[in-house]
Structure formats: C-alpha cells, structure tokens
Length: 138
Ligand SMILES: [Zn+2]
Image 1: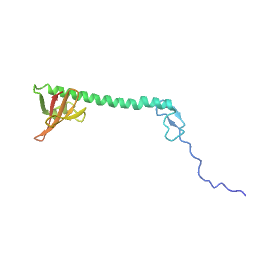
Image 2 (image 1 turned 135 degrees about the horizontal axis):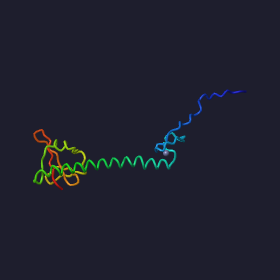
Image 3 (image 1 turned 90 degrees about the horizontal axis):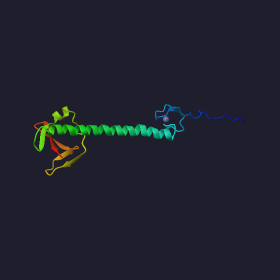
Image 4 (image 1 turned 45 degrees about the horizontal axis):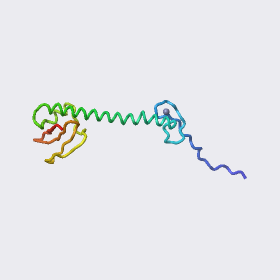
C-alpha cells in the first residue's frame, strides 16, 4: 500500500552565507549559526586586530585623561606656595578636569579621602554650596 509522506516540514534551511567578521571581505557558508569567522586563522586575526585594538584604544584613552588630570592639578597647585591648594572645582572643570578618573584613593591621617593621580592627590569638599578641590603634591 502506498503511504503518502506525512512529513510536511520543509527541509532545514541552510544558514545564509555571511561576511567574515575579521574584515577580510570573504563571504562564507557557516557550519554553525554562531560561526562568524571563515576559520581559526581569520578568528585569530579578527581578535588581534579588533578586540585587542579596541582594548588598547580604551586604555590609551583613559591614560590620556589621567595624564591631563595630573597636568591640570599641577597647573593649579603651582598657583600657590602652600602645601595644599584649595580652588573652586569649576575652574579645573573648565580646563577639562574629570574627577572620576583617578588611579586610587586613600584616607589621610585625619580621615580625609584623597584621590590620586600620578604626582598629585585631590579631595573635593563642599563649602557654602560650592564644590572646592583641595590639591596636594605627592
Ligand atoms: Zn576573514
């Protein structure tokens, strides 16, 4: 007796071709849905020139901000001969100072929390509703 094939499911669709993520411009037929590189060589190349480059670019960007912060502290610290210098934070911000970028923090003997840059440390205090920055040399 003839039995009609009841399987009406369409055959599995091949995964569409895609362009290799490494930037080589090759189109390839992926074997798996999550395959984004043509092969391991392309994956290694993609990693070295993509992700690593991005990581390095981010690191350089942060280091640049830290160096700039340190130079801004140096500039304002030099305005006075006192061991610590207190200035309106606004003035430093106008120069591009970004207090959220620092390389560490530590409390001094009096319990004041200082944030560190390479050659200077600072702390921010509020007096009369104004943000002041206290700078000291390391
Ligand atoms: Zn490739």
